[in-house]
Image 1: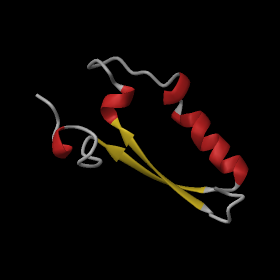
Image 2: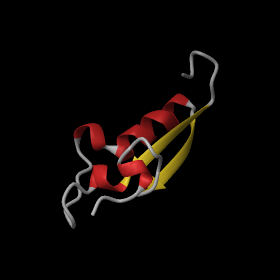
Image 3: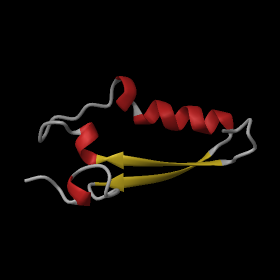
Image 4: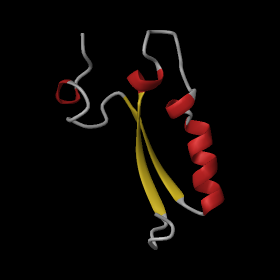
Length: 67
């Protein structure tokens, strides 16, 4: 993205991706948010971070939390 001339990246951070089971958090491997942010910072990219359970309609059940 940086080499294409862009300076900002936007990323959703869905809660259920990092908390697959209630009370159990996983920030390893592809879920390593801190590493992603460090790489973006080292590259000179700005980050728009969008955390939350209701991130977009495509993720799960039209944006509503599954029961």
